[in-house]
Image (cartoon, rainbow, N blue to C red; front, side, top):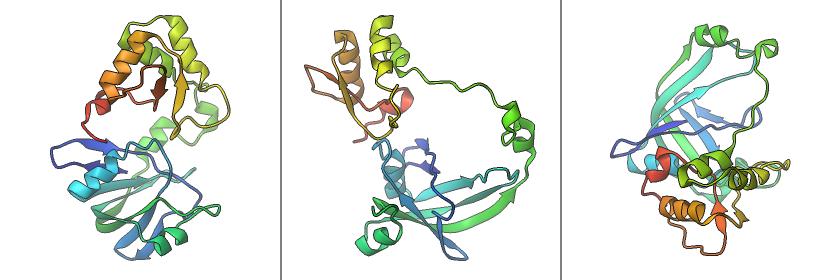
Length: 201
């Protein structure tokens, strides 16, 4: 899902769930549930500011993709969110998309990348968030390893805050980056890069 803000920031956020999670209301309107994620809400803020949105749908083992663009609105109606719920939990919000353009895109890029051919997939790779923070803060490999150790369990990192005693330089970098006021431990939402410079709460 791609959105555009009033002052130009473009945000792209992956969305996914079981088949059918996007509800087709009619020929020009669909509903997309918002579920727990990384809690940044950049895309939601863009929708509030401009309403401009674009979505591309990928279906496993299908070469063609479906693209749509238009204007979006955000709803928090309890009954609507309940109907978009999963496993007894209502959706956090509902994004209603009024489609202005919709079409299938050819399969060439998917075929070239061999996206749906497991025999051509690379070996799994784990992202080192520790290296990212340590490099930006001038900390050492031990501190990077300490952060990376947090992600070695089976629970997803996305959407949860974790605490770890950390090198003062990393803490200082984080406080500058995200406005943290913590002095005893570092709370990591795993945000880094240019997006972190947005003045968004």
